[in-house]
Each structure stands twice: as C-alpha cells, then as structure tokens.
Image (cartoon, helix red, strand yellow):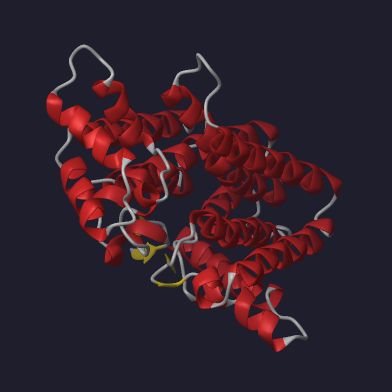
Length: 337
C-alpha cells in the first residue's frame, strides 16, 4: 500500500496503484512540457508554480476516474494536464486579485515579478491548455468551455456579492460550486470519458467531482483560518486580509445578526470589518475565529458535502478505484480537522 496524491491517500490494489502513480508521473511530465517556451523568461514564469508542487488533486481524480474504463487510453493523461494547467492559470490570476505574496510555500508570481507578468503567464497557460484540448475532440472542448464559463461566472459573482434579498451563505456556496467545483467535476468527467467508461459512470463521476470540489474549497476556507503557513502553503488569513468572506466568516456574520448574538460576536465582526492589513489585528482576528463556533459550523458543512460526494458513488461497481474515491472524501474532511 503506497501513499498516492494529496492528503496521504492510500490505494490498496497494486495494479490500480501502479496505474495511478504512472498516470500522475506522466501528467507531471506533460505539465513541464506544456509550460516550455522559446522565450526562457516565459518558461521560468510558467513553470514557477508547476515546480512548486501542489496536491495535484484534479489529475488524481482523473486517474481514478479512468479506472472505470481503459486507464491507458491515449486521452486520459492529456485531459488531466488540461485541467491542471487551467487550474494553475487561475492561481496566477487569483494571486493578482488577492494581492497574495505566497503560493504553495513560494513567493507568488506577482510578488516574484509583478502583476502584469502574473496575468500574462496565466493567459499563456490557458493558451497551452487550449492547444492540448483541441486534440481531444470537439466534445472535450465544449465540456471545458462550459466549465470555464462557470468558473469565471463564479469569480464574477464573488466580486459582485449577493443580490439584495439573496442569502449570503447560499450565494457563497453557489460561487464555489462554479469557481472550484466545476473544474474538479471536469477532472472526474474527463478521466472516465477518455477511458471509454459508460455514460452513467461519466455522469456519476461528474456529480461526485462537483460535490467533492465544494468540500475541498470549504476545507481550504477552514485551513485559511486554522492552519499555519507550513500546512496550507500560503499565509494564514490571506482571505481575511483581502476582505474575502469565506464560510466561517459568513456563519459568524449570520450569528452576529441574529437574536442569539453575543457581544463577542459583534466585536469580532467589527474587528474583521476593520483594517486587517495590520499584522497585530490580523493575528487577533485569527485567534478569535479559531475558537469561535462559526469555524466548527464550516467544518460540518465540509463533512456534509464530502458525505454527499461519497453517496454519489453508490451506482459504481465495488472496486479499488471506488474505494479510493470514497477515501478522498474522508481525506478532504480530515484536512479540515
């Protein structure tokens, strides 16, 4: 039994384990190849986050999805590379919007160079993903385009905020289903589809991917508050500093607006609404949130979405790949503490 992919997931079947490890290694090679340019500076910038590592959650999901068909089919690895390149490109853009200094334990591209380089490098990665995608056929292009539309729509909705009368928590869950869930759903869908799995299996893995994608993001929300930099690969409280209301903050605000609110709830909201550019205030806010019931509420929401993802797997045949996908649900929950 070998540890594979993010969170120490174990794949217990030797043949499946070998296929997944070989697939992930091939994806890594594909990422390096896809980020090469005739211009050395572009190669350096494009490979900045590739070489920093990462969980490779999306390629892992594609490799496991491919186990329900032919895992060695020629489109499996390229499709996983497409999804990871797209994800990497969004990170370059996200760090500019968030003014983040650290990503995956290294300086972000915008901190290492500047915002223009980061944005253009993200665009370069999108173009390389599109180039690979074109060889996978029009259906793959359509699927990726729809997911990308949802991803961008989610980002815009986050920027715009909830419409008047729309519950802020429901709005946020809609945002992350688009921003994060849509692309993770494509990873499961491509893995199954490119392997030749039947339509029902492709559908199951698409729905599973979206739900575990939401759980994955909610775990990140918890980690942004509860973890140290070593665990998360980015500066704790990045979302707080940038004024991004993640699920724990939204639960806090809902509680502070209720009849059951305590003075401590209102004081913490006032602290979050103040200038968190000050390191001392940010440290104080993180400490308060780490012991507030809102953080535990967010953990429970992570568990709920992970449980829904696991339930989606019921129609699939009982095999090592299905067990590993169920294990991913547990691993995501464990990551959130």
